[in-house]
Image 1 (cartoon, rainbow, N blue to C red):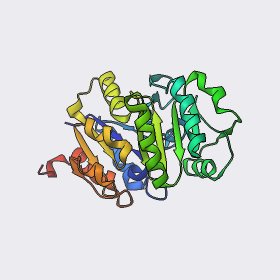
Image 2 (image 1 turned 180 degrees about the vertical axis):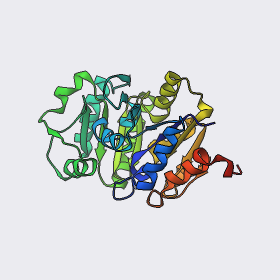
Image 3 (image 1 turned 90 degrees about the vertical axis):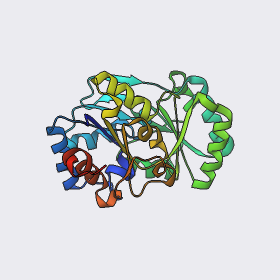
Image 4 (image 1 turned 60 degrees about the vertical axis):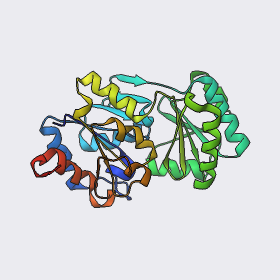
Length: 270
């Protein structure tokens, strides 16, 4: 029996137009009415995720910033908070400068950039969030960052990811959320760790969880959930570990999965 569904946003719940289809909204409401907890598990910052949570009328803790922060949709309680350390935060800023890669950092639900360029502007439009330009990102690093995001050409970021992994190893969680987005969080901050923490707080077993995602940063989500569902548009590396591959994000893949495993499970021969 499913008691908790954790759904990624971009490339999963959202269409390529960054919308949730009306039929999917209706299905999620039906799942909630059946007594199942539905939450979001996204790399997006909390203010961006909250807008979709409000649209879905979710009043549960949301997994945001790749799992670095779990916070009530109503912002009354922070359940989980794992920032990047001060030392690693400072080193990431240095590496961005050395390799000439755009960097933006997150702290207290604000995204900061040292420059007002196309990368941060495009990110703000896509996420429907505001941003703050500050000359010296190092001045914020003492507190540590919720998340660090690098934006660039996919192949350049692939090479840069290898550089980061060689330097930090297990002391940081490094994953792509999109071909042009490379994200760094605390090693305890990933969607799988956050999902298990939330489930434990709610008294839900791992076997009672469905996780739905599409990209590399959803690996822990898919592997942690009792049933890992990957979108038809998902990356091949994630599909290879999926328990079930649903339809694409533009073909209401989340709706299909919810019908298959929660709303009408008797129709599923598996």
